[in-house]
Image 1 (cartoon, rainbow, N blue to C red):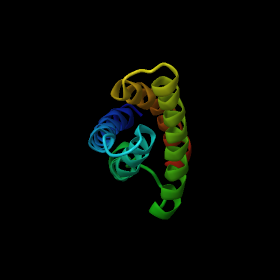
Image 2: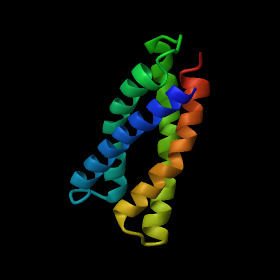
Image 3: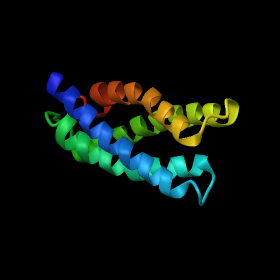
Image 4: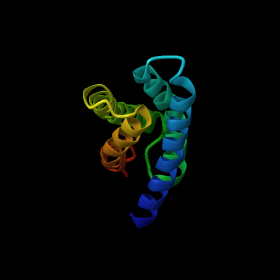
Length: 122
């Protein structure tokens, strides 16, 4: 579990950096909420590949079984992310990057629990 959690943090950090980079590049061309969704979509690929191969490498589930489950897990995390992001951005008028970082941290715990105990369940 300790090794899995370490890989989860590493992969999650790489996916989060991917998400933030895409968001940063796209936000001047579209609404921040859409840039957040685009960042999520690109980071999803990084996240699934990394978690499948590293964080939950000991899984006995097939790719065909874990990908749809992970997609549901990630979409649930993104729903939380987007709700917090909009509340902070529009409701509290925080700068977009600060709102994004806070929203991503909020959703990370939920994603780990659902990933460990459902999407990549042994």
